[in-house]
Image 1 (tube, one colour):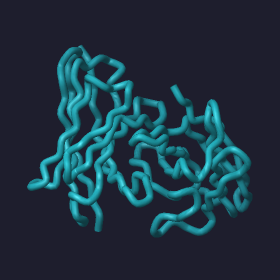
Image 2 (tube, helix red, strand yellow; image 1 turned 135 degrees about the horizontal axis):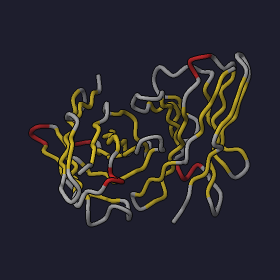
Image 3 (cartoon, rainbow over the protein chains, first blue to last red; image 1 turned 120 degrees about the vertical axis):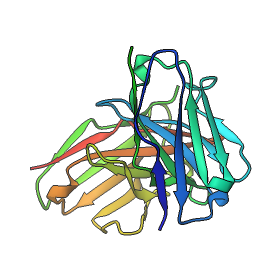
Length: 119
Length: 110
């Protein structure tokens, strides 16, 4: 079965960077994309960007352009999302999700990783 | 900046029917936006219910259905149950690899 397992919670200071992982299993990693979506406390879902897991090309939300980097390691079937210059407003649960090119949707989700930014 | 709008909240009686909508701050939603709907129980990860306007994901009960109503995407829950009480988010494909989530609707069943 399709599974996306994310890394554990992180606590970071303002100005630091955080790198989260999302390990995929149960499907051919390189034939789908991996998206990253975040949710601040009490707020809605916010799309951040995605990576073509096979080719490595990326697309980012304009809001995060310049601060976010998504990469994939095909040998480890794992995608990573790094967010830099953290501020308190980046405190959120970060989700990865599988992107399906045929139906242009996010069809399976990871369990989420809480990132807390605090001095 | 495009805003995808949803009703903030809806209340439905057990066994009743409710239709949630997903619109654009400017323009109309059509099937070319590949609208999908996600269900999120507070404290849990989202779950995709509907994709490509009206296709149900595996294991999703048929009381959930998707459509285009006028100039918006819609999610209808027919025969609402207590465990349908949670948050619902639409997401639209805007083209050029860009996706935007709706503002979300909290559904209460009482």
